[in-house]
Image 1 (cartoon, one colour):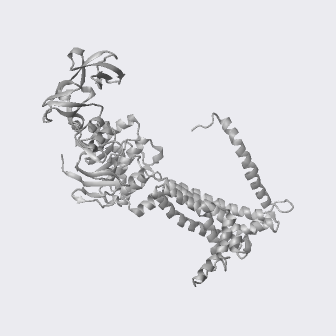
Image 2 (cartoon, chains in turn yellow, red):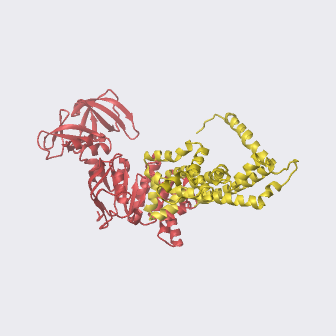
Image 3 (cartoon, helix red, strand yellow):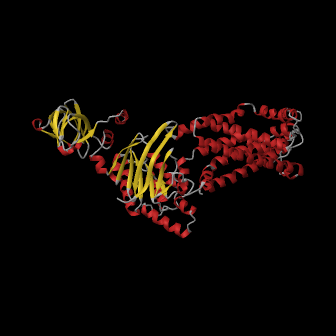
Length: 275
Length: 357
C-alpha cells in the first residue's frame, strides 16, 4: 500500500514523531548517560557505573534479575497453555476471555498493587478468611514471593496477548499437515506450534522481563523496606539521596542488561526463523 | 477398474445441528483419479477430511484396504494430504519441509536426500532445497506441498482444492501436471474441487455432490453427456434445461414443438426435464428448424460465438462457430442423440437441490 505520494510528504508527516522522539527519548537518554559518566564537577568518571560492584548494589542487581527471570518464567508457563486453549476455541467467546484477562489493566497500576498489600497483610483479607475456617495463615507479605506474585499479576497480560496473537495466526491446516505427515501430538507441538509462536513468546518475554527488572513500585509495596531491588536503589538516588550521578550510572548498568536481553532474543528469533 | 481401496459406509456428519453429510456411501477404486465435485457447502471437503482423519463422522465407517480406520488418528493413516493454501511450514526451508515426514519415520539421511531430489525433480523444482517457502510463488509452493506429501509414498493422495489460490494459466498448467504425476506415481488421487472444468480434465471418475448427497457418479463423459438430474446438468457446464412433456417413447414436446429423441421408458404424456447442451443447438434457416426464434444477444468467445435465442418463450443458450446477427430470425434444430431426458424431481428435497443453482 502506498499511503503517501512521495518521499517528501512522508518525511513531512513523520516530522512530529521525530521531534517527539528527539525531545522526549533521545535528549533524556543522553542526559542519563551524561550524568552517569560524570561527577559533581562535571569531569569524566566511571566510578558511578563501577559502584554496581559494591556488595549492597550488586546483591540488589542479582536479586532483581533473579526475580524478573522467575516472574517471566511463571508468566510464560501460565500464558502459553491459556493462549493455546483460547486459539483452539476459534469462537467469539474467546474475545470475552481475553478481555477478562486485560480487565485489571483498566485499573490504576498502583491501586492494583496496593490491593494485594491489603490482601496479603498479616491481618489482611486472605488471613482473616483462612483463620475464620480455622486454617493456618500465610505470611508472604514483605518477602520475595510477594514481589513475584505482584509482578506476575501485573505483567501477565503482556505475556498472554502476544502469545495468543501468534498462536491464533497459525493456520489449522499447518497443524493438520504435520499430523498428516506422521507427527504425533507432542512432535507437532515441539516442531511446529512452538517454533511458529516464537515471535509471540519473545515479545512476551521482553514485555514482562523489562518492567519486572526495573520496577520499584511493586517491590516497595509488597516487599516492604526489607527487600531492595535495583529499581528501588535508583529511585532512592533521585528522590532521597539526590545523587543523580550515581542514579544515572546504575540506570546505565540496568540498560546494559536489557540490551543484552534483547540481543539474546533477536538471536533466538533468527535461529527460530531458520529452523 | 481396480478393486475398492477406500469405502465410506453410511457416513453422517453434522455441525451445530446442521447436516453436512447424510448417509453417504462411496467406493474409491485403487489407482484411480477420483474427483469430488460440487458447490461450496456440498460436503465434499468434509468427506475428504473424514478420509484424512481430521474429522470424525457422527455415524458410519471408513474402510481403507479392508481395515476399519474410522477412529485412526491422521498420523497413523497411509495417506497424505495436499491442503488448499499449501500449509507449508514457513519456519523451515524447502528441504526441511519435504523431509518432515521422512524424518519422523526415522529414515536415513542418504535416503531422505535421494527422495527429496527425486520429488523435486518430479514437480520441476530442482535446486530449490535451500529456499524458504515465502520466497516461492503460489504455484511453486503448491508443488512443494505435493512433493512433501508424495515422498512418504502414500497409497492415496488427498487434494483439497489445491489449485484454488492460483491464477488461471497456472491452474491449467497444474491440471496437466497433476494428471502426469498421477500416471507416474501410480497411486490413487482423491481430488476436491468446485471447478467442473478441472474435474472433467483430470478425473477418471467424478462424484457430483450437493447438500450432503451424491447426485451422480461416473466417468467425465457420462456426467457431461448423460446428467441424471437438473442439478448435475446445470452444474457441469452450461445447458438449456427445459420442463417438457414426454409424448411417447422417442418423442418429446419441448415448448410446444415435437422433437425426436432416443430415450424410452418415461411413459406417455409425462412431465420431464430436457437437457440440451448449448453446443448441440443447431441454428438453421427459419423454415428448416423445429422451432423459430430471434437472436437477442451475441458474444464472441474466441473458439465460438455465444448467442441467446428467444424462441417460444424460452431463452436458448447457443454455442456455434457460425455467426448469426442480433435480430436475425433463425430456426432451432437438435439432433435426437443430443436431447437428454431426465425425470422431474418428485420430492421437495430434490426440488430444493435444483433451485440452489
